[in-house]
Length: 268
Image (cartoon, rainbow, N blue to C red; front, side, top):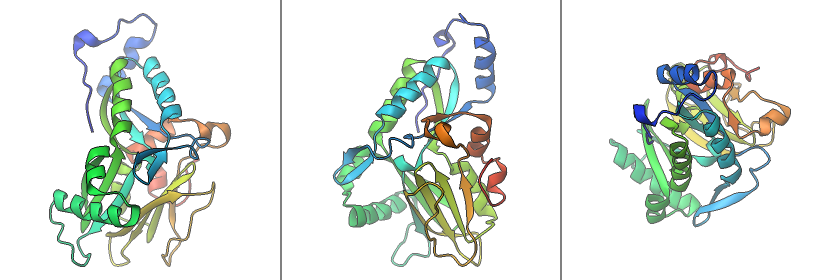
């Protein structure tokens, strides 16, 4: 969404053993970091716009600050929880929809959010950062609170961390999966939250996308006739309540490389 790029003069002095090797690795390939509200914090909401509460950021922001302190001067891709991202689909086949451009797709989705969530166009433009992605036979529209993005980038800049990409954690994996769906529906599960995708039986075309809170280990009814494909973040116990995940398995998941995108079941 934004890039707080470094110049060579901004790189921190190597005062600790091992700092420069980690810096060089991040220059070659940015670290991939997943930020979640934390399973214990989903019930604490903050208002972004009228009638639009989202999980509070304060605990996650502290965890993000700690990560940045320990990775000063590095580059990273920051993947966000679905709980902080409003997601909608504007299919080309929708009646009375002529969304041939990104702007038209946003306009149509804004009308839907206004109708169903009471989020007016003025509040959407003021308080949310909206982005689109062209998918097979439609547009995927995502909106993230501006304050959340601004706070995360401010912390990163303070610690000279360059955020080269920011978006939903499932972005790369979904793009890979939808090219050859393994089921009629895909469910991307994280602690306390789930994003659902339903596809057309006749081809790799998304027909419906929505997200909602979930009880641990439960995937709600999805309306498809075949067994669902489930991709679940793979931590358990106390580790699942952490706000920052940057382990190797999670990084592969963010990159869309993890085997979970290719077959059914959760990551180990």
